[in-house]
Length: 332
Image (tube, rainbow, N blue to C red):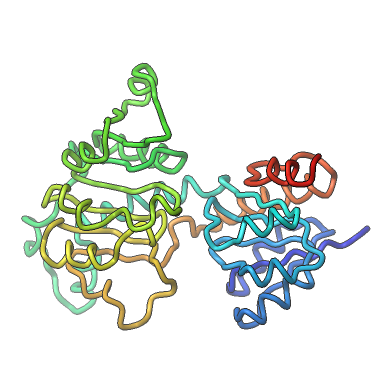
């Protein structure tokens, strides 16, 4: 039985690699990075039949040098660190993995909202300092109950987050220029689609962004965006860091343009130790871990393996970004 070499482009820990290997079929062999450098990525790329990556970069140089590469399987829905155009030109299919992401990220959205509203980090830290701030922050803490949550983008993750926030009696609105939900569907889901981003920002107590990173969306969360939000509102980002203009975000937080924020993703990762985020008031930070559960990892790797096996067996893959383009380019 032939062994297929699968290169992972996430520079992870041994327990993560072990969890991935446990889900692999016997004919798959995992190749891992040594130091995460470009040279290291080129090295494993040359050895591999298939690439997998969650947030790890697959540089253009790697795809160009990968002689045996058959398919790239992203372990999520983001593919902004992969040169899909070059892969398409080389006839290499690129697929994404929606499976395993939605629940973990949806739960993390709720976690960040509660953490900001209840000042969990600040209060917990004071407890560890020997304090007991039982009364100190009561006038600064809030409930989700009766608050309006506005989702910018309403795909799988936002839909799952909306379900969970409805259990807290939050009113759900969304704006998505690519979704046209009927009145009947809105009533069934107990949500309301608004006509413009401006309207959503003006009425929402909580604003959570759920759009992909592309030329249209990069930096669209800017000074104008924040100026249209309520001064009592909070901002949540579990999507992509480069959706946000950092300078404008920092100013909005420092000036009190908005009340608080929960951030899981950043334009450049990892953050440096002296980053500006840790100096911001009423901000909760997590290190791109919204989908970071073993449950999600197993679900993702199971789908990854199934999809790679579809390719090996000559079957149609799922969630392909460029299959039709490759067919057109190669005249088949």
